[in-house]
Image 1 (cartoon, rainbow, N blue to C red):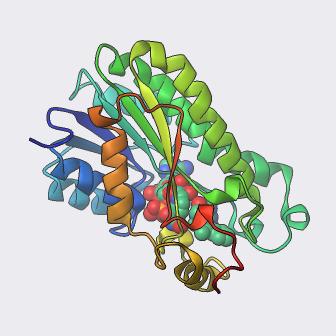
Image 2 (cartoon, rainbow, N blue to C red; image 1 turned 30 degrees about the horizontal axis):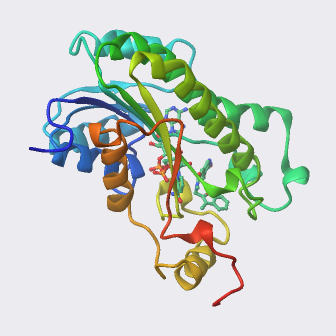
Length: 261
Ligand code: NAD
Ligand code: 0WE
């Protein structure tokens, strides 16, 4: 029997076959979960329908987390298919590309700051708030994806680092709220992976090479490896883990950068 047999999971954030959300969806399906997917816009609808079909799912719903009422509307439609939800996966981030380059203070603007917070951090709380009534009476679990730029000033990550710090604080506050209802809330802090969201990022190749040189495992992480930890964290094997940020980064976060390069 799989880790997640009999559980229903909503996956928010699949955009391509390289998406971290896709790695998580595949691991969850393999472990016996039934899946539903959301897509950001019409452009992604066809693709996400195809990915859903590959996991045996025919539930795909539009949800631009930045659009007023979109999250509530999506759950209203989901509830026509599922009366109960066990797992919520949030794998969404966005900041204006111009802010992910160079000096943080030079690039930062009020609207850029607020948009990064809205899409990358507030959306997890908003999804959690709306999912809450559907997750009562079971062993629910919510999961989000973060990055080490939340706790270290990393070159170019800039406004996203502040948004990820906010997202990680969300994990703790949501865990405190939902724990009494049997719902756990956790994050995975993944090492760098070449996904759509990482494509065109200045210096990514150099940074992937750096991680390969200095991380304890001497390589980069894959979406399959992030998926496996995601499946575990949302399974009953992790029943005492909540409010936690789990690093899935080949150990990069525990070493100093000079050592072996
Ligand atoms: P990705 O581009 O595959 O996924 C990002 C997703 O965000 C896409 O599916 C996109 O549609 C969605 N999105 C953006 N704006 C949205 C909106 N307004 N409404 C709904 N959806 C929206 O890239 P990814 O790397 O898989 O990113 C997933 C998560 O993983 C993000 O939170 C990212 O910060 C995090 N992460 C990525 C890395 C990395 O190196 N790739 C490392 C650590 C954490
Ligand atoms: O969280 C992320 C990526 C988040 C992201 C990426 C983009 C690119 C396209 C958010 N918004 C946008 N907006 C766009 O227009 N990562 C952890 C991947 C990532 O992003 C970086 C990195 C790494 C690693 C940005 C700068 C430096 C390193």
